[in-house]
Image 1: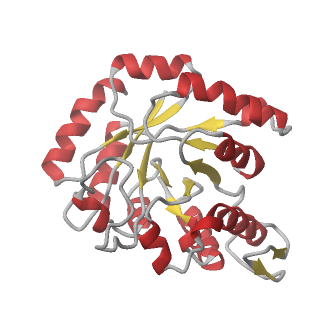
Image 2 (image 1 turned 120 degrees about the vertical axis):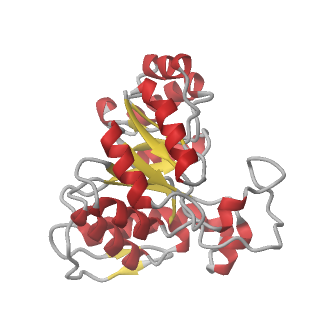
Length: 274
């Protein structure tokens, strides 16, 4: 099993360059980081994780800048977003960012895509909350049009682009994994336009994975092509064995959003699982 790391990188945490070097030197597979541009203080939307929103949510580094820094000091470490709030981005600009990071990292980038949970944050970006899943689907399709080898346009209900010269070209295009809770809507979207699923943690997969695989195959997708990457896992020998038995080949272990010493101690504790 390939084991990477997930972390909220902030202005108060370990720096991405130091962490990336430490991960690669220790033999970890990847580094995944989340995204929040800002957290409105109104806090009308409840955080799915509980009552108190952790401090790091309002202090996250820009994921693409942080991962570019990590790419510059590593050669083998895979890099990804867990997740990018695609509805909040201009898709033409995001396509360029993804393609550039993929080029500079030598094809080591995975785009984790999420729909978001914080309505106030999305409102500030002008996102139509009720339509955000359709918006995300169209924005991913538009990005893929810009990544195509020849000038390719895209016309959707929410976004469009004319056939354009747009380089660099990621070849092959980066892996796209959809984040979110298990359910028929999400699984239909995974089967329609993604390369796989990025669940948070490893709970409930014994029930969910057979359902996802069935939807995937009913959509005519290659059963061997489905990729599942649980992120922010709290690892234990038993949990990793159960995930392996379910056919999961890759996970990321959750690191604390903390300073260098605490993060490195956690990495040392996780080394037993490599």
